[in-house]
Image (cartoon, rainbow, N blue to C red):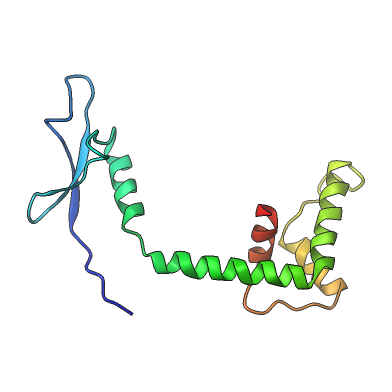
Length: 137
């Protein structure tokens, strides 16, 4: 795995981008003072938004790849076991039509019971992961 260097950054008010009533912020390198991110020349409206944008732009993208790989694996598993997706669809439909008690919810407990009824095991992911991927489809 490659070693990535974390930069020490801080968010400061930009005198050139700010006006009297509209403060604008930029991300600068603490050591050199160079502007690293200025929202394409407009500046950020708050310090929090500037830091959030910087963190997003400089996040560990390998985690994103792992997440996509896991989602593809779950989608393939759902295609191999359509009974699970069908049971979840039926449960959702029953909840919408109020054919079940009002406290019934589509959650991991329901997923686990569907898996148990059909004698299925999950390998490499959890019921929570399966449910989140199913909800997105």
